Length: 422
Image (cartoon, helix red, strand yellow):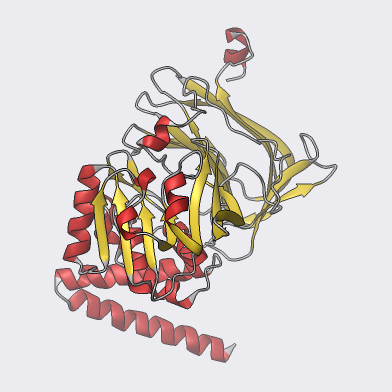
């Protein structure tokens, strides 16, 4: 106990000295010191704690100034593990996803890497110190120009940018040792397969707009071999890829998939739910619907434990949604902060993918048996898509969810029935 107290006292003293030094520094230096501290916290708590272990990748994430790649009004969120809007209906990926995808392709110092979907330039910046050259393509001209200017200003000399349709790749610089795709087509573009070197790796999200899978492929004898996969959610690949898309979402009939958690993928994870942390499907006669439910557990205050799923919804056509679920808790307590408590909620986004509000059910603490919750959720008229999130969100303990339903309010009921249960 004494050794622990001395260690804590040392940390407090060091923090006080650091804080005093930051306060005395010029404003620009203070901002940089705060950004650095926030970035280190993010790497430790959101990257390393979530399973990224490649030391070169961790160092690159730690040294890459993500706040430089987001709009000024978003910089206060730069070191949270979350996607952020960057304009032109595009987003910068969460840092964990960037780190995870980078680690999966196993970047080597002599690699030539092709990136499809430059976006803000952040992914290219993370790759830059890890490989020989990065060739990155962006179809949205204003984004590509802005990313190029940012990368040039920050001195990323081995990153080469191009405005164009990433579906076609960049044949002048092929073959590539690695290809990383940060937007989602329905199927693998044939030109990318052709431009991948034999033995090379490609990581790419594939599937429908809101039901995607992140695949890691290795090229063997001219064909792609699946090495791993996991549920994910990326912005769509536009251009030729979008024109070839067979399945389109219906924003007038919002719905989620596998809300009863009955479907499990080959990796043993809950199918159709993305960015799962500290979550597992449980097969038990205690399920409220079918044979399975979703369980989230966490014993480290502040650590993420959640899952999410996107869906299309048009606020001009859909005025309100039904959100309902069964919930059971066991020893749940708030996390490192009072607002880190379990809940289920829906976040809405407009046509620019900027947030236009969120609302949900919860939070819950303590222990209780299965309880059913149902709420009418008003849809902002600006909404064009949404994400439903479930989990502990930094709380500790154990929580179970079953039969999560998101649908148009009153669907399958008479208006009288719908209003009676509001």
